Image (cartoon, rainbow, N blue to C red; front, top):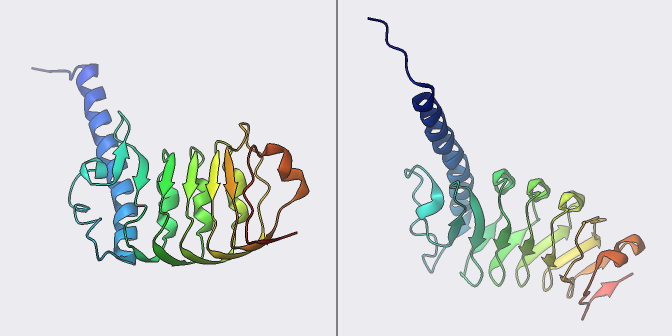
Amino acid sequence: MDRKTPASVLFLMFVFLFSYIHGNLEGDALHKLRSSVSDPNNALQSWDSTLPNPCTWHNITCNVDDSVVRVDLGNAGLSGQLVPELGLLEDLQYLELYNNNISGTIPSELGNLTNLVSLDLYLNNFTGSIPDTLGNLKKLRFLRLNNNSLSGTYPAISCQEKFHQMAPSHNSHHLPSHNSHHLSVLLIKNSYVE
């Protein structure tokens, strides 16, 4: 007897398999972050890489498709460095890592997060220049990098929507003159800006 599998069953199997693989890619990227930082307050304690996706982890928000859209780790007491794998979180809209002790450079792979609306890395210990790849973030509305030790030139961010806030204070850098028409609010205090 020749039995055909209904198309709807095949479709559901494909969706499940895609969700499982996609969740694992995001989980692997976030677990790589967990491995690269010290977490004295156990903010990442629920981040278990053996789970099928990270949507059950604390400080992670997912959309209805089980894709990570928000990472909320502000004021978590983290120290260490960011990892380039964060650039794999293709649906991420909010990356909140403010007021920690994260050091090193900002990974250029964050420029792959084309759905990013808010990038909050202020009150950390970042050094080096701001990656030019942040210019790829056309949906970015909030860029807060103040109170770090960043230098260089802010990338030309040609977003379609205007910024609500760009906070470069306590850094030493240059703002391109062609960027200023995209900003609704530019906060510059205690900075060296040309």
